[in-house]
Structures are given as C-alpha cells and as structure tokens.
Amino acid sequence: MNSKLKFTFLLLLVLLGTGTGWSGPVKPAKSLQKQAIQVLKSQILNEAAWALQQQPVTVTASVSPRSSGTAHDFFSEGDYWWPDPQNPEGPYIQKDGMTNPENFVAHRLAMIRFSRIVSALASAYKITNDKKYVRHALVHLKAWFTNPATLMNPSLLYAQAIKGRHTGRGIGIIDTIHLMEVAQGIMVMQNAKAFAAADLAGFKNWFSQYLTWLTTHQYGKDEMNAKNNHGTCWVMQVAAFARLTGNEEILKFCRERYKTILLPDQMGPDGSFPLELRRTKPYGYSMFNLDAMTMVCQILSTEKDNLWTYETPDGRSIKKGLAYLHPYVADKSKWPFQQDVMYWENWPVAQPFLIFGAVRFQNKYWFNTWKKLDHHPQVEEVVRNLPIRNPVIWF
Image (cartoon, rainbow, N blue to C red; front, side, top):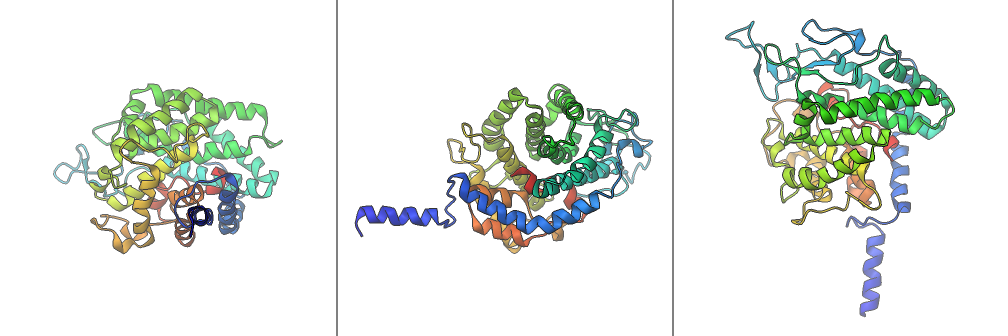
C-alpha cells in the first residue's frame, strides 16, 4: 500500500469512529445526541407528566429549630456528623462517609424536587415544543425566586451546619449544585412566548445576587479554594449561573481556574483523582468529581477556548480522566481500590461524564455503557450526588 492510500485508509478509520476520540464537526455528534434523546424520551415524558401534577414546595415549607436563619434561608446539616456517645448533648463528631439519617435535609430534598420538576418540564418542552410545560415551570420558578412569601434568599449562610460547632459552612455551597438544572432549564425555556420578560429578569436577578454572594462572601471563597470535589463543584455551579446571567468576567475566571487549578491540582498523571481515592467512598467520589469536571467542560467550552481538548503541559486532560474511569464503570469488579463504606451497591448509574464524553469524542463504548445503566435512580444518596439528570437540556 503506497503512502497516499495508507493515509486515506487511516483517515477513513478515524472518520468511522473507531473509539480513537475523534472530535470532528457537529454533524456526527448530533447522531449520538439523537440516540440519547430516543433512549430518554419515554422517561422524559413520564417525568414531565409527574411534574405537571406537582405544586411548589420551597424552603419556607419546613423550618428546623437548629437553624440560625429565617424561614427564607436554606438550611442543611453536615452529612457525616453525629452525636458524641461520650457527650450526647455536646458538639457533634465526624464519621467520614457515614451519613447521619437524623440530620435536617428537608430543604435539600425540596431543592432536589424543584430541580427534578423544572428540568423535566424543560426537557419535555425541548422535545415537544408544548407550552404547557413552560407555564407550569413558571409556577415553581416564581415560588422559589420572586414570590416574597415563599422565595429562598440568594445566599447560603446556614448550609452544612454542625450542631455545637458551626451555624453554617462554606462546604455547604455544594448543596446548590441542584440549582444548575434549574438555571439550564430557564435557558431552554426563556424564549417561549409564555415566558414573560419580567419573570425572566426576576429569575436572572436572583441568580445574579447569588453569584455575587458566591464570589465575595468568605464561605464562597473557602469553597472555591477547596482542594477536592468541592472546589470543582464551586466552579461547575458558578459557571452555570454565570452563563444564565451573561457574566462573561466570571465565565473567563472559571475557564482559567479549570486549566490552572482544577485539572493540574486534582488529576493524577494517569487520569485518576488521588484526593478522592483517599476518601472512605473512593469510587463514588471519583465518579462525582469526574461528572463535575465534565460539566465544567460542557458549560464553559467555546470554539476559541475548548476545555474538552485542553491538556496541561504534562498531559492531564478531561479525556484522560474519562479513559481512566470508564473501565471501572463498565465493570465495577475491576475497581482496584477499597469499596465505599456506604452505597457501594448503588453505583454506578448513568453518569453524566459518560454521555457528554461519548457525544464530544464520538465514543460508542462510553455511550453504550451509559445506555445500559440506571437513568432514573431513586436512592437518596445517589440522587444527592447526581445533579445532572437531564442531559437533553444541556445538548
């Protein structure tokens, strides 16, 4: 075979999608997106039918006597903190990875429910163009963001509190990752005729205020500088909210933070996340962090600044992270590290990094793994750590 024919043959192999990670034009990516929509269509419509029957439940519906905030302030308690057997009435003590079922989680559950409702309605609207989904989403969006009687304050002063130790912590900011699909749902529906300009301005104003708090309050600064998945999730949600509000300065900051902080400081040379592997839930946290980094790339990439293809000088990249973890998602029995102390049997599910990585790199292996996993998990811990449950609104 002469050199010209050999080159043509190799090029054809790449174009046919041999799993080499070709990142060509939009057209082939659309094919996997369409396949994903077909996989999810029935679930989307069923979830949207459920959502249409739901009435708003905001933070004002439940109040904890341990909260130092008002009825409009989001409150949660640190998951891994328990009463001290030696001092039952004293400050709580930590048991990493062990969730205390007695802690207050009603606001978190309400926010997750809100996210499920809005993102389901936005997904159904995107594939059907039926305005009824927009009209009902507005009922919930107004309750959370603009109705004075039921709205949530745009700050997180009392999240992840610890009895006897802290009224709130920066680490609690991770709780609002469940507002990401709300923000994205607004973006999907905002041009519908049912979406009044005044309503859109009110929602964007709420997120703009929350962005200011996230980037200026010490809690926000603490979370931004967290070394593990918390730092990743700060960038992920800040990017989502900045895109909705059109804050280009913050979007630029987040892109640079991914390239100069998140990727080089968190990813090992082999594509793993050493800081997550040291935890008592190394499997779940590794997937969670890769989901978050993948969404950072999905939200922030532009033609001029493509984070999907960015590599550090020593070769760390999102693609390397995907290639490292995929075999252990496809076959969990190959996991070479300790099992998670809780919820080991409930992972993996249809992880966002699989579908978005598959679409971006045209990798059918990753797509097929995603396709066969659970797309509608019900276990509370899994749902808590799976803020992206509706890929269709992100395409």
